[in-house]
Amino acid sequence: MPSPLRCRTIAAVIIGTALLVACGNEDQPAPEPAKPRLVRTLTLGGANAGAWQEFPGKVEAAKVAVLAFRVSGELAELSALEGEEVKRDQSVALLDDKDQRIRLRARQAEYEQAFGDFERGQSLINSGGISRSDFQRLEATASTAKSSLEGAERDLDATQLRAPFDGFIAVRHVENFEEISALEPIYTLQDVSTLSVKVDVPESVMIRARRDEDVKVSAFFDAIPERRFPLALNEVATRASDGTNTFEVTFEFPNTQDFNILPGMSVTVRLETPRMASAPGVLMVPPRAVLADEKGPFAFVAVPEDNGAATVTQRRVVIGRLTGAGLEVLSGLSVGDRLITAGMSKLHNGLAVRLEQDMPQ
Image (cartoon, rainbow, N blue to C red):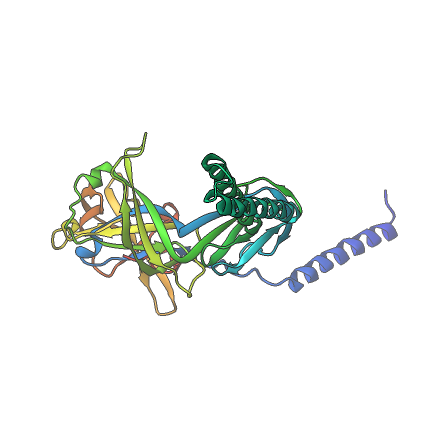
């Protein structure tokens, strides 16, 4: 049986430990409340606002060139870096030109010899000092020597690689001082002052297309959904791609200084025509924004509040046809509603949310 003194010591230790734990809990700050969920919304417009079709696309430079030397040799200088802006005719790379200069001097000497023989033959042909066939051989030799000299001059000039147009160096394919073969890629040059967008349009859309139809085409990016970029038609493939039965359509738009839009970025292209317009009172919404349960289809709407937040409200809807322009909603939604278009499975009535930048419609 423990002594009374030992019992008092154990009790003091237990009480002290409890006090330390209590004091430690008092010093810890209370956890901050979680921020409301961020949701993406689409402000619904009128019937004509939904008269569109969307296609995924990819941004490309309107003008692209792979720069390469026409002759082989050892790289002596790579003066342009990736991402650097270059001007037309600017030198961007050099080859060691020693071999070309030696060859040029040899061709120059051969030409001077052949041309001298040709001139002497001219002075002798009229006096009968040389036959007509010998003179023609001298003339042919001089002509061949001149062509060889011009080729050597072009080869020497080809040891300097120049930009064919204003643009930016997109890719540098080699390192300096490497041995380069003729036509081996050195740089990829892109002119991004004008950008192109290529989309694959299904045959179901192409077969209904009309050449004289007034089509409004624009593009937008997920990162800047509030900005629309009008597109101009450039070319249309008249043959379907193998396997997918889609037709490649290319649009163009001028680049902007407001955003850093580069080739390779994903973009959404929207086509709007009067023929796609819905009947009055019918709204077109993205099909993914409408869910269904045992009671039928429904959608979530964000009701904005004064503090910048919003409250989720479930709306029962009556839907119509699923078309290329979207899903028809006959009732349950109104023009101006902030329709939630993503993350609906985690929402419920009365949930407080934050509003992400509105998608364009």
